[in-house]
Image (cartoon, helix red, strand yellow):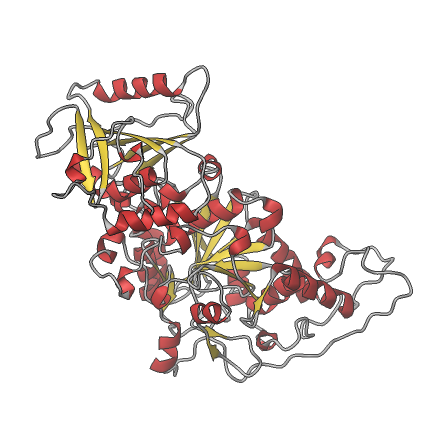
Length: 568
């Protein structure tokens, strides 16, 4: 015999008023969605309980954020909701109302019509939250409106909150992922600074499409930091689009840079961004990329989980987060091969084949790069191009097709991640639904005669907003951000790992292979003093011993006859 007890988390302040959920035979009618969520909770570790306070301008905003509210309650957190009387055509009754949404039942408070009602509500919240013994982490959420005109900004210290966030009205329906953040991740909400780095040349139509997708995305109260890098030969229309771009009502800081000497794509990418401190993250975007409205949600969710919610020593090999999930592998010597991470994981009997995964392969079609690793890459690239210890054409990674990509920054990035055992996080949604796609337009690495079949291997469907997804279940339009194992990002230790060729490996194995290669390359002598950048080619000194001979494995690469489309 078994059963399910629906806890008081589904009611308000411990009240259990669920008579409307009882059918004619006296048995509870529990929705399929609630059953799924309860099963997820049974399988998931117990999370630290949080207290949320949500302030909304009207019932329309409440309806939009209802799925997020329901999941907050289903995760066992405490919640109070205050709804103002602003711009609502529907009548509101008593000060305590109920809301039923697909089996989720919660209460909300209707604020007074008086002009000082908002300020009084904030004072009451401060009195409640700022007691002599603060209990659990507290999250204050303001939602609705496009420019915050109905509320005044509140310092989190004033109400003793862990975090205060401000959601625009358009963000509310896409905010369900916020309910999955842990206390530690909420504490870090304001730490990361995410900068969008656009690289453009002479494709004004491509740049316009990318910027339109940036403008349509959800940023959940964060300021949008963007720099648009123009090549020296950028045409007048491209410059006009870049110089005139704004984010509308979304708070933003946008700058434009224009080269005076032609750089080429490798230099344009590598010099497009440099981190400012270790909480600085760069989203590298070439102009033929297009973004999902939820790309920033994926970035922020993953950054908070694996940079701030995971011990740094565990996740130190993680150099970035891809927005794009590949359908082909490019790095086998014989050329590109079809690739499907779900099929690979299913054959390997991995419990959740739809899990996100770690891969050594860098993505040039929409990806976040982390500060420590990007600085390291610039040092490594400078050393390799200087030919101080070895010719730039010498092979570092055996049997890797990118050795022939002499004009690609990814050739050298592949070398670094191989030697150091680094990895990036990749999405793995059904139908290859991604947070970015590439339109494969003619450019430095894309020939004019590319055929439609090749284009179809790289163009991916973009994840749509939840309002669209719920209308198209079971299709590529119906894929949602929380279509993850147990509706959450997995623990770091549960992420599968792939090497540069797309084979299943482990972080320990990648590290050992890279170290072995650094030893065998023998570019460093045991007793010599090396510049700091040389450490990326040399093994740790304790690994080398005087008098020990190490095999020198060098070869020279030649240009690839079949141009790679993912060189970047």
